[in-house]
Every structure is written in structure tokens, then in C-alpha cells.
Length: 460
Image: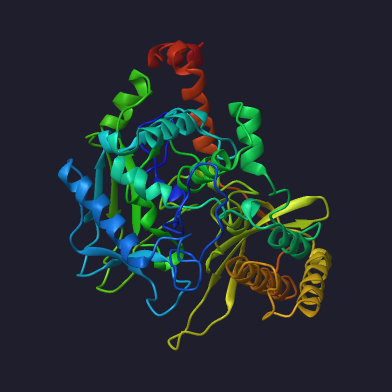
């Protein structure tokens, strides 16, 4: 399936957000303490978070509501903790029986989705209409048609994104990033967009609401129940894709074009892309699709650093990075090549454009020195006044940065590295030109092409 522009028929959720869940409670005008990811087991403050039993009740109520209102939630999968013994464990969706390729896992009708601006596209902006709709449903409380979904959403606290961390946590993260490591300029991204684009305010409840929209609905026109139980991972771990099968704002030409390829039933679906064995976690992707998702392939596109900024987690390999060489940010993809024993090196692939000069490796060497100095300056087991989850994520990200920079250094110092290589993506060029044609509707003004007129001109 192909990802089309936002107003088109097909939206691939390989290009959405992933892996949030129940962290704690969020009530208007309250200051929510950041809590262990989806667990109360590691906090002494039992009043500020939702215990696991209550979390599971919220999940069951949500699924029951969905099924009773026409949604399909597969019976060969379940939502559970990745590691029940780990107090910081997150939830995920796991197969309970063998699932075949192409099998439908989730189908949610439009009536069960909270809809914002379906024509909204830019991933670095904010859907003001969605914020307004969600606020309306929250104020309705149990009278809302979406009450079970809203109760689940209200269980997510404000301090998930790094921009909402404690002062000490943000200061330490900024020290880690310095002036060169991504993500730069992450602080107050979403709140500033809310104030400038949506004429929003500054109270704690509004900040929580904006960060919730960023987590659940960064660049889609719908909030889909259950969808955020699926965690993100690329590579061979990725085993499901999702799409919206609905005709929204497209013109007649687009509708006729896509109708030949896709059956529309006004639902959002998740389907298995390969066989999934019992016990295996089901993963979707934030920034990768089997086909399409062209805007995610551009240099400087959405990657590991963006996921930390916008979703609050550190992506496992395979990863996508953008590091600075001189004045230019260069897109780099990393994946692990495993042997039969599960060990292997990291394969480095460069993004679109020309490779950096070989002597530019000095930029990465400086990055590693900076990371090593940070490690010397801070003892890993002494978070002090930094909440433990923020502390853990900072060190996870430190290790990911260090591993990535060292792998790229090894690659650039090898005899196989070609500094003159230039990578062009014909699919991206074709997609860009096709979408441009659809956007400006220039195809409506084209003159018919007549073969005999061309032949007559050639003969003359």
C-alpha cells in the first residue's frame, strides 16, 4: 500500500506516533508528577498514578466499548507488560496465537475516532481543531460518546515529552546534547506552537492537552482508540502496518484513481505484514513504510532524535540519525547485522545526497569525546533531584548516540567508504512531482494528446 498526501484516501500509520500508554492521572489545574512508564510499582506516591490493576481495567473497558460499537479487535493478541517483573516496563501488543500475513488485527470505524482537521499535514505543526474537539469530549465526561477512550487518555500525565520534564532533567539533557547533537531546539516546541498557531494559554491542563495531542496524534487527522498500544520498531521486528480506508477531501480524479486499488469502508485498519508467532510483540513504525512515506525519506527526515523529542522514548536499532558535518546535517541509517548467535556489527547506510568527505569524520570524533566527557562528569547511579525515568532515558540516549557515532566513524575510516557517492531516489522525485500535479490540479487543464497530430508534425 502506498502513502498518499494527507487529503488523499490512504494514510499509512507507519508514519504516525507510537507507544504511549497509561502513566498517571491528569486533572485540570493540577501539577502531575512524572511517574514510571505505565506502572506504579516504582513510586511511593500511590495517589498520583494509576495502579496496574486499574490500568488493565481501563484497557478492558476501552476494548469492550470498541467491540460493542462495531470495531474489530483481534482475539489472537493481547495488551500486556513487556516485562511484568520490571517496575518501569511499558505495555505492548503481543500475539497469543499464530497470526498469518495479511490478517486483520484491528478495524475501527470512523464513528469511534475523535476527528480533528483531516486535511492537516505538517508534522512540525499542531492540529488546533483536534485540541478543540478533545477538550469538548473531556468536558462532557461520562456523557461523551467516547467516554471509555477519554478516560484512558486522561490517565496520561503531562511530563512525558522531554520539553515537559523537570528543570533538572531538561538541564542535564541539554548538557548531553551540547551545540551539535540532535535534537537541537527541542524545548517548548509543542507549547509554543499551541500559543502561536492556536491562540492557546499557559496553564498546566492546556500544556498536558497539547503534549497529549503530540504523543497520540502528531500528523494525522484522527485519534484512533487502541492504536497507541502498539509500540514502534523498524527492521525485521516490524510486522504490522496501518491505514485509513476512507475517502475524505480528495477530488474526483484522486477518488477514481485510488478506487481501482483500494476498497473503502470508512475504517482504520491494522494488518500483519508477515507471520507473527505466539509471544511475539506486534510492532508498527513511526517513520517507515513498505512503500511510500516519501516525506520520511528526505534528508533530515524523521528519526531517532525526533522520536525522543516527540514521543519520549529511545528507539532501538535499526535507527535513523541526522548528524552535522560542517554546516550540513546528513541523514544516516543504522541497522544491526546479526549472525547465527545473535551477534554482529552495525551496517551504515547514507541518506539521499552526496556523502561527506572522509576527513569530515573529525566531526564525529568530537561528538564521541563530548559524550565521554559527559559520562565522566556524571555518575550513572546518582540521579539526585532528577526523576528516575528521566535519568534512565538520558543515559539510554547517551549510549545510543555514542554507539551510532562510533559505528559511523568505523565505516568512514574503512576502505569501503566512498566519499564521492551520490544517492538519488527516483521514487521520491516521482512522488513529489505527482503530488505537485495533484495539488495544483494542473492535470485538469492539459490538452488531449493526439497521436496523428504528432506524426503529421514529425513528417513535415
